[in-house]
Length: 79
Image (cartoon, rainbow, N blue to C red):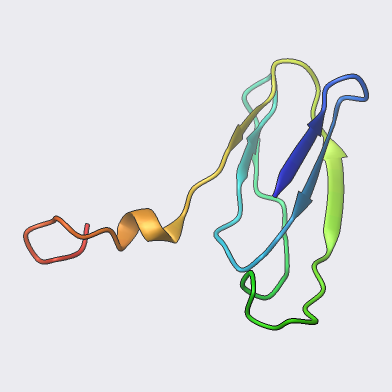
């Protein structure tokens, strides 16, 4: 998940087995924060590390799902 605190200029992230997000700073620099965690709901007692990073005005967050790549409908059955 990602939680933006626009007043503080921070973004709090947790990894749950998905692809990592891309953070784009106002100057165009791209970073990929390292997030570790088991896939969501893989284990009832799973713990997820939380990381807070700077997220100043003008920043962008790009999140994606590997499910998009596995979506049916393409000629060979996978997009």
